[in-house]
Image (cartoon, rainbow, N blue to C red; front, side, top):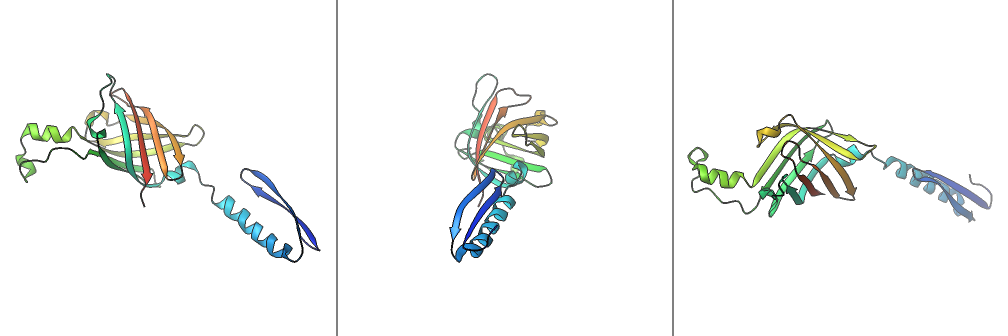
Amino acid sequence: MYGGNRCNFTLELPAGPAVVPPINGSVCAAGGQSLQKLQHNAVSQQKSLKEQLVGAWTLVSCGSTSANGAKSPQCANPNGILILDASGRYATVTANRDRPKFTTGNRLEIPAEQFKATVVGFAANFGTWSVSEADKTMTMHYEGALFPNIEGAELKNSVSLTGDELKLAGAIPVLGGRSETVYRRAK
């Protein structure tokens, strides 16, 4: 409310009302309009967790261990991406940057031992994803994976989102063990 030589404002923000001290003079009307715009912007910027997660994320680090405590080879010097689309589909790829190169350019002629050495440092899967806003978790349903034994399984991760940094942590289905992965929003 504003008028006269003095005015008072109360802004209704998502975190609760904020009372602005009285303003004197001719700036009252302009100040009121500016504060109303600020209030509108603050409310419109509140997005659901799912809306905040949608997009492409580049891998910063991953710590994945099996049930017997062995570290996953793809997490040594990792490179990767996680793509979460608004319709609930995802794809993720993680690769150890130090994987050995093949001795041939034809993938059909790669010796089995070379193929194994390279594939062990690589993980990829895709499927659907959903979010529980209440407990801040994301569930990924594996539809396809380089390691077919996890297809059909679900991975439930706790989600921590701070600015452009996303942390996912949870138990690894089928294989046992735990995973903690950090991503940065792709620019």
